[in-house]
Image 1 (cartoon, rainbow, N blue to C red):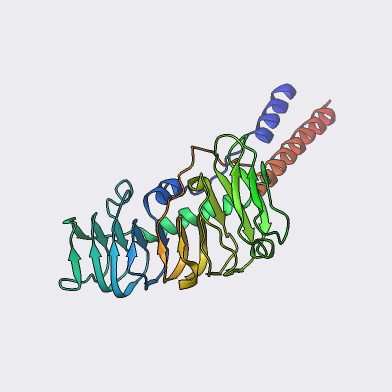
Image 2 (spheres, rainbow, N blue to C red; image 1 turned 90 degrees about the vertical axis):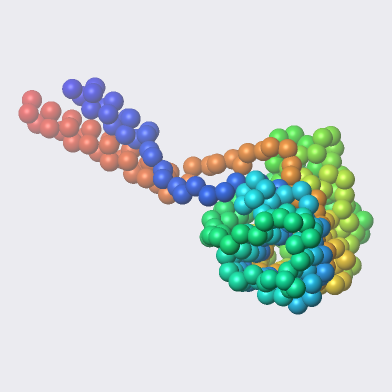
Length: 317
């Protein structure tokens, strides 16, 4: 009987079920499908987006906003333009379908040159927001792996990715990033998914930054995981994940060549990809601290039960 109790205690201390809510969407699929993803309101002052657009809140286009809708939007919402709120202004669709939840303009304020469908229906904005915030937080928890940074405050320095296991990861501060000028990327060997986690709540990409699109840019993602405001005043040649931040992409930015994920957006430059689309990779899943605590408590309680059993056996003997 004692052996059975000990076995039960051992099993109880080793087996634990941790319940966690899974993200409703695949974050990589969302980023493959949509060039810009704004979880809240977006004001678009630039006349054209060559790719696809997701806006969770109100889309305001003071000038005619031309959406080419190239190469995406089909797998997730079957639409190149998705708007969770109202759409205000003038919209021209050159290609692809439209899905909107709120008010949407009619001709002459809407030109459907591509002949795609226009559907009013539910947009799961909360699900998209949860997915991308979860993704950003998971990436932020990764340790450095296989990326060497340029020298601090350097001009024309390179982020060097040495390959190996994906994802390659580098953790830096906002001050380090903002001190660089004309940075580049180089991959040693085949490009792999490369995550640059940038800490800091208020990030400005200054006019002298000039990060032009490198070879393999579709593998590079800058994760501004803490930022609540981001101002981009220089060309930026990779994707940006900033799901908590209001992002201002001013005319000084030239253009952004990658995805842009934000909580809110004021866009006055072209954002045209390529989108973040690296070879498949997995994010390590360490045991959460609460789960470890429950595991330890379970083991201690089980061992205490064995000790009480032993005491009763001795007392009865």
